[in-house]
Length: 238
Image (cartoon, rainbow, N blue to C red):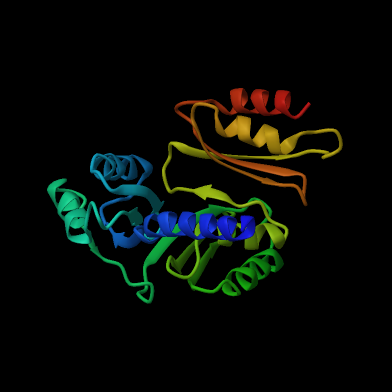
């Protein structure tokens, strides 16, 4: 009898909980004007103000937001209507089979020779979704185009790091400069140092490659000087 009561209790609990589990649904929406974290914040603020929104998952490379919602409280039509009311962040249908072209520049200080260039291109063209690679050997950077529905920046960076390089963001802007440091990994918390460097005012991007013992930095030279940056990095890497 005790076992039967326990079974009935379990079944009752399952019956009560199950409908709430089933009430969750989700939809992925493309928002072409959502280009940065500030844009995502504004979209999130608009959507989270409505009852029935459980969670939001943003992908800025694809410019999408996946909305987990309660269909008993809000519909996809209502979600789209909220976005339309923002004026700028107009929703559109997201298709995972579409080609979403993205481009970026990567500074690669280790690219010093034609052999390095060939290795970089071989690594990049192995990445699914890679469209084109344009190298600039003398300036030590590459320009890549890719399909954001099939790969992303992190995957591209990882492929280069595994190939023995330390890629960091490159921009064709005179206010942007790059720095590169080599150090002995022994006794150095370089990963922690990289996080602290990224937090410095004027630092845009940081790449730490433990395989090489290297740290590459992209920074705004009108906000932090090269001397100040070197001082900060050397202090952190002691």
